[in-house]
Amino acid sequence: MVVDRNNRSHRPAGLAKGVAGTFDENNRKGGDSDLTPPITTVSFGSEREACGELAKRRNIDLLWKTASIEVRGLTFPDTRDVFKGITPADARAKDIMILNNLKHAWQFLLDDTDWPVDWQYLSEYNRLVGEGIEPNPGSMRTDIVTIGGTEYVPAIPAHDGIRQQIETDLSHDDPEERALNLFASISRGQWFSNGNKRTSAMAANHCLIHDGIGVFALPPGTRRRRIQG
Image: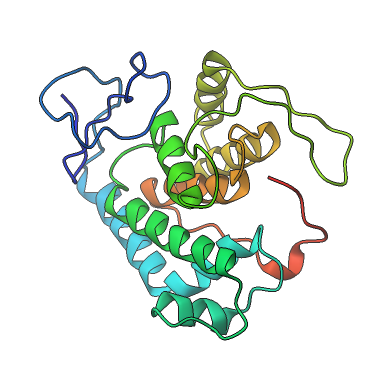
């Protein structure tokens, strides 16, 4: 059985192999997994480790930029305070929860960069960013949603379609293209009920750090309008 460095099983909880679900914390005795083993070559591993160290050095900046994808008016000083366990006087409770959830998601990412991203990781990232905020975080979307400011209505996702899209996105030769295509697919497809852009940012960073390329962040000043999801 394949487990990650935290001894988590990669068998989707309660569903068929490779279909959906979060990490199974309780079942560590048996089951199958289609997750490929981590790459352990010295050169690639050293580049991956360097990217992980870069992310750790820039942790507050990355946390601020990841949260700002969906949170208006968030400042770097407020993010720094929340990161240190200090509650800013004018901060909204939901914004603090979003920041703390993202902090946990980033720690999860940095603990598991040896493993390539797959549906189970995406599901876990969405669960982490939505825990205590959204109903059923980590579960695939099953209802109709709209995208604010556009007429686009994403189709309700299906397991097979998502698995095929992940495979397509990760088949590109250019590692930056792999990360950006996956980011766009999750954001546009709205694979989860909420937190899709935060999830897609975590997925892009997982891809880039795993491949030893760098980190991904969108400066808050580049966002023209808030998009639901």
